[in-house]
Figure 1 (cartoon, rainbow, N blue to C red):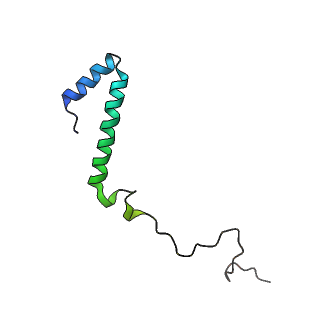
Figure 2: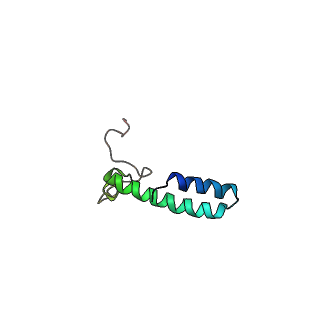
Figure 3: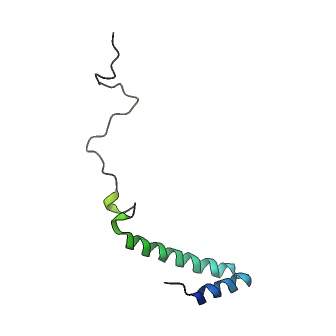
Length: 77
């Protein structure tokens, strides 16, 4: 759905006439369609594309509050 100059002119007239609800509904549908078109065009570059989801580890990392078994962090006596 592409907006022509005539469409934009009609919207401006509707706003001046106080028909805000009609304009709001039209713009909501227009923006949703525009977003879908852009997401489809971006393909895998879209940040929420399933290929860009963070992979989960099979075994979760230990919590920061749990004591660590690291030799590097162990205090010298």
